[in-house]
Length: 362
Image (cartoon, rainbow, N blue to C red; front, side, top):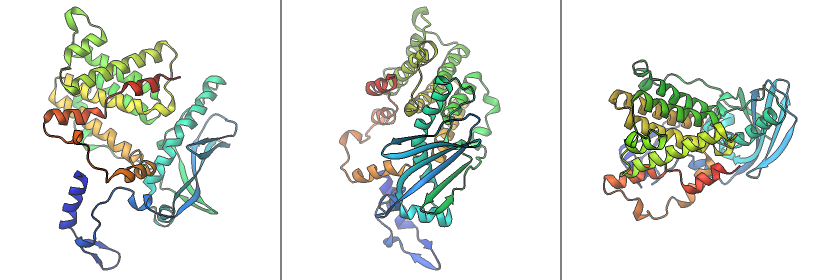
C-alpha cells in the first residue's frame, strides 16, 4: 500500500519520455507496478541454459542433478568449472538481454539459488576425497555468465567491479576497532558463501565488543548469555529478539567449533539474520554515536551488495508476490505507535523455533 501511494504520487507529478518523441502522460501510467512485473506477467516462456564459469584449481567428475525441477550439470573444461542450469525464463527477458543487456540482474538470482547445491558437492570433493584445492564459489566470483537459447548465446556484462561506498569510506579509519573488523569479515565470508566462517566471525565480533567495552554480566557472572541479557533492554521486543538471536548464533558457533557441525549451503540465510542481529547489537552496545553510524553504514552497504548480486530480484519470488499483492492488509501489520514499529521491524529478523530446527538438521 505504501509503495503504491508513492507510485501514485510519481504518477501525478512526472511525465516520462519514451522512444522517439513519444510522450507518455501521467494518466497513461498504470495504477501500480512492482519490480520485474513485465517478466513475471510475460505469457511467453522459453527454454534456455544458464552457463556459469569459474576458475577451479581442482578436478571434479561430471555430475548431473535436479533442483527445483531444473536440471543442473557440473563439468570440467580444463581449469574451468562450468555449471549449466536448464530452466524456463521470460521470452521478453531473453530478448532484452540478447539485444541490449537489459534485465541481466534477474538472471543472477536463478544462479544464486543453484550455487548452494553446487557448493555442497564441491565440499564433498574437499572433505570426502581429501582434495585441498577444492573450494566453493559465489556469483561474484564467476568469470563469465551466458544465457543460451537454441543456438544463440548471449554473454552477460559480468563480472563487474564495485566502487567504494562513500558513507563507509569517509569514516572507516577513525572507527577501526577489532570488533568492527570481525563484523566486516563476517559479511565478507557471507559473500564468499563461507557460512561456517561467517557465523564464527559474528560471535568473535560480539566477544571482542564485550571485552573492549568492558561489558559485564549479572552479579559477576560473565557468561556470554549473562552479558547479553544484562546489557540489552529485553523488555522491548527488539532487545529481546537481538538477545535471543545472538544466543542461538553463539550456540551454533559452538557446534561448528566443537561438534563438527557444518551449515548446509542451502541454509546460508541464517548468516543474513546473524549479521543483521550483530548490526543492531553493535549499534546499541558500542556506546559511541560515530561508531554506531559507521556500523549502520556498513549494514547499508551489505544490503546494497545483496541487491547488486540479485538476491532481491528473484523472479520466482516476485511471481509469488504478484499472486497476493492485492490481498487485504492484515490489521496486525498496521503501525499505530512506536511499539508497533519496533515489532514490525524486528519480527522478520527473529530466528524462529522452526528455523532453528531447520538449521540444526544435519
